[in-house]
Length: 270
Image (cartoon, rainbow, N blue to C red; front, side):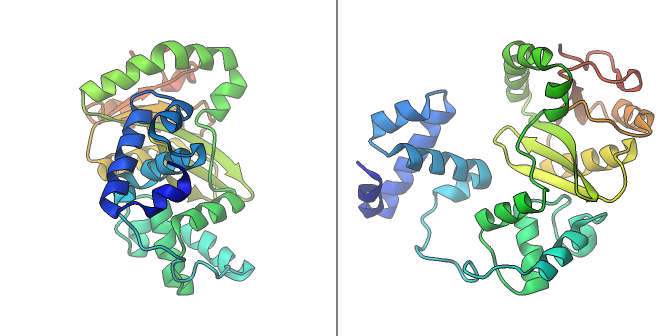
């Protein structure tokens, strides 16, 4: 079955096929193997897997074909500036949205309110990359600081941590900070690479990270296993105090040893 054939089957059959393809990849099979077994083109397998990572169960449901309203329209420079200014130093719920942290969906809602046009999530992703707000690497600072330690951690400790999170029904996230133009971005990536983030006009601080993790825990509704990148922050002791007080909600892990003020018994898995 090629990609063209897949579009011709019934909605129910296509939904079942997508579920089986994604489940096969999720179980450890390579996308090349899944493509061969299910007769689905390799790019289609990748597209289905990425859709599930971004949208979960929603990605399996049949959708109307064709462009969504507003997809052909482009945000001009003035509107783009307005959008990024709305996000800076402001969490979504303070702007009247239900999201504790910014996501692609929340940004799409903001664009619709400010500009009156609904963008697809893929288009939102393109704008986030253009604005420098979308971080692609999970551990950029730790990798730059000690690449061998990160490789060892990925091979030895990360699989154990992932299994432990599954057993404890904990949500696993990777946390990093990046500087983009005149702002800083604190981002959390789930194990399925969905991104939640906040934008700040001042340098990263322990208070920023503590507030972010509070909101991340609230949004997740589960215990968190958080892999923390080796980014610099001011007043790190305040984060240490927060982590000590919230051990029942958040377990931190550091692929590369953290600064002394952040070292917590059992937190470093290197």
